[in-house]
Length: 219
Image 1 (tube, rainbow, N blue to C red):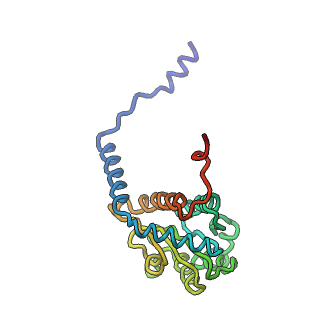
Image 2: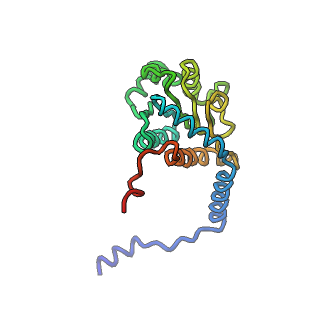
Image 3: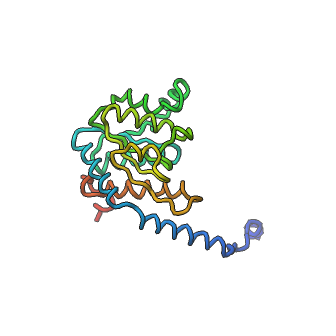
């Protein structure tokens, strides 16, 4: 009896969401379908070929991103290494060096200085994950801009999966996929979500994939 009384204190009535919440869900998923339909297939194929050339030429792949894009970069490093046989790295995986360089040298050069320490060269490639691609005039992701500038100086390939108009990344990239903006209010979530869609496509692409993934190889 006592336990029943205790449980009753924590019972809550069923929650019925108003219709407008369901409408939002339908709208968001409809936008997602629009993004898929508007992705540039040729640009994705070009990105796959460019990345394959970096790997097959003995180059390394450096994945750069900030915020949610940094988390995507960390995940993608695993996939490019394990599934596609790249020597791949993300500077944001080393928190000690990242924060030391930010504190001592400044946020704007944190990636370019890291790349200098990694001896970035013409065989290597950058893969930029970004919502806007970097913009010096607006002081948005200047660290991506400086990294791209260094890569261009060294002759390294510059690749990107970016949103909006692609920013500095799209302007300077060897190969870039721009995630279409179908609703300006949802630019960031769609851009970051489709970074994952596109990179998972890439690591599954026959031009890049060299190892089977676990579940697909499990009978």
